[in-house]
Image (cartoon, rainbow, N blue to C red; front, side, top):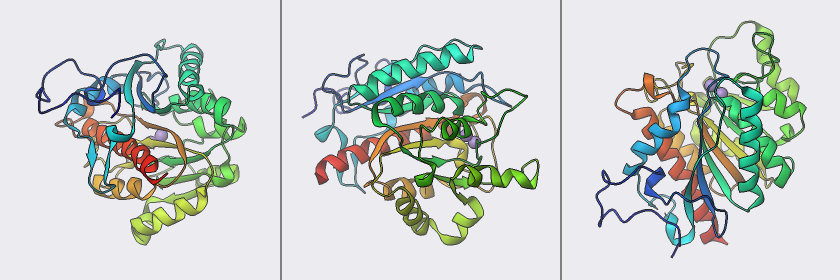
Length: 315
Ligand code: MN
Ligand code: MN
């Protein structure tokens, strides 16, 4: 039985207590920890609507509704894993480099301590310092990137740091192996036709949303698994991968997206991959309705935890 686990909901109702993610213990340790949920409340790189600095608190709030046993994977998270809420990374609003340094340092502690981080943004720029930290421990990883956007722009407003640029920078810094990386769910209008070439030119495999809808989710899973192989991977999930009908609470929504059921199917299909870090980004609760966006994010995060339990059972 895990030392660090969630509160027993038969003893204490799920609406009670101080909010940590899934009512796990708030501890700043890597000792005997399998995974740590960590908040990265930073949105100074958003190009349109800000507000994802409040993502972690909104996700924590609704996460008390999630449960530890995943019937599809037949895995009870805390039978196999010690999990904690590591709290939030220190950020400096408006100061990108300072925040990135701080994010990298704290994420390094987790990766180097043998912990699988499950981070919650913040805007998508925070994934860059996460990947820098990941590289320090794991070397080049494959990137599994769910998003409606490529996020591989050269620059935005003449600046290199923006939530639309992290994966060009990660590719250029050679902290990810683009030859095993995949971007899934890309859709929506662009500025020019050349924009569709940015990611392929960097070596990414791209599965656009129209292609995914046409081939079906089962085939999407096959393509991702084939691309990643047995390489170590980092999974980043921009909540705008979901259709705005399922996730309105985000900064730059795009129609023609995916349902939460489809997202669950894909994520569960990736349970065998060697994923060493996860994040969910771009939840902006101000634009949410009935907390559905933060609830989707919280559930995706518990799916990631179930991955880890499943892989321990399989060993
Ligand atoms: Mn993104
Ligand atoms: Mn996006």
